[in-house]
Length: 202
Image (tube, rainbow, N blue to C red; front, side):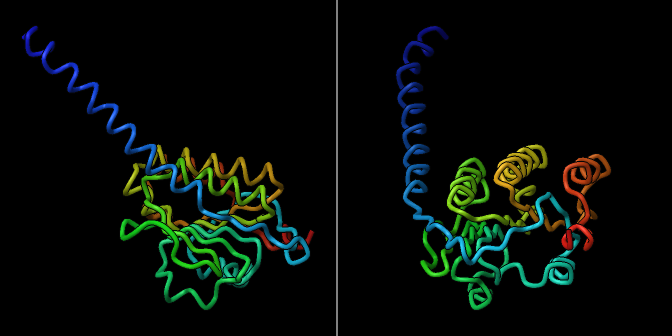
């Protein structure tokens, strides 16, 4: 057994270093996603807060078409090619998919991101907020949970919520609570409040 460990140890360290290098290379490519700053004159101040909706239809009824408004970061699973014509040129879209990664469109800015790269996605959202984006819209929560588990997905949502509110922005979460157990539902409800029209009128 000792001989096996002595023989395998250098190979194990080499494989570990190789995997770390591959992960680093995968992360570096996201650094070169050129997020353009939003024109200040086109962005209206959103209602600051963290809000949840049960469906995209509820969002449309309360806030009209979020996708067509400038200064919005959209994290979605929707068929991006079909949705292209309703995206504002000064919106930023992260299409969460395993189908491909990288640039989909430069105007509007659309990037394909793997669902397991949530740490990188958080950094990309933070970068967008620094460049003037003020609304973060997420409708891919169920898919993120399937790919990463609820706990890791919840940590991602909380991190994005904190950096969005710190930037005086608004985060819109679209999730069907029927897909959650009672404990998970309670955590979402504590962190994301139902949207009320009276908040928007203040």
